Image 1 (cartoon, chains in turn green, yellow):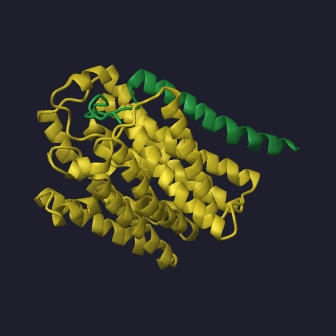
Image 2 (cartoon, rainbow over the protein chains, first blue to last red):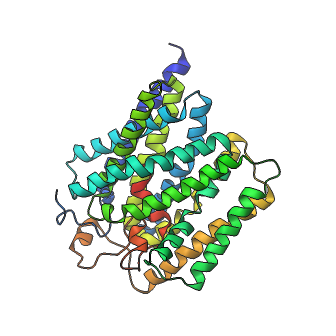
Image 3 (cartoon, one colour):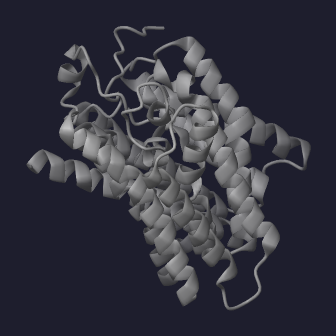
Length: 45
Length: 338
């Protein structure tokens, strides 16, 4: 596999994984999984 | 102050992520990917990422009805909007398309008048006049010939986006933002996947898949989360105003990456469109300054008996009931832009 193909595969896999890690960290630190006014205790499924 | 600066930074990162989306889209087209397979893969990847993020920590969904409605809106509304937007950037410059799309805050305001959710005011009417004049200059002020179908698709996208924003009002209200975004992405993924499979299957080169993965992650999931995190620190008005840099970033990125340029009249038109958006936002900002303070940490927010009316998601909250929320602009963008 040429280097370019390796690079493309790496980006296509690594970037989404990095983004998920960043979002998970953001959610843990800043509460990015909720929003002002949304009270998950009142809207449990 | 530190908290606000941090929030502003997060909002700007979010805007940059959204701004890069049409650039990545154009690159995907150049890599030979067709529209329907591209959007099917984009939404499949984004939905997968969002559901994994929700499942990973067993984050709350909110009401299942809201999740189901989100899926329906994604299938019938958001998918059309996305199709029109990416279809337009196949035909016209991405900077042009993004400026035309950015008329949606003004369109939401018009719809809010028509639906009786907001009252007309001189400020809002002035913003509408600015936005209309701006679009006329952006579309008609170019030096070359314009692809009218491409421009119409971009404007159609703004119209569908407006409908989506207003329609998602109640659906997003009782659903967690990530879950709502995930359900919208899932609905859109379902629609595009079925259409793609019926019309020849989903094919993309390795490079094409890479650009699509960047659209799904850098320009969909990341900016949604960044905006929500930023919003929680600076409040909806500041977050919305900060997000108006998005089309400017797109124009700048299109110039650097794609070599696109706008004529002086088109740039002036873009400035008018942005001025209209800011004018709409400033009203909310003034209200926030006089009353609402930015929401605090999650625990404080949950304990609040009177949460800020404008949440991140869907303008609906803006335009709707309390009438004291943010303007339509970016608040909408968060959960709805998968």
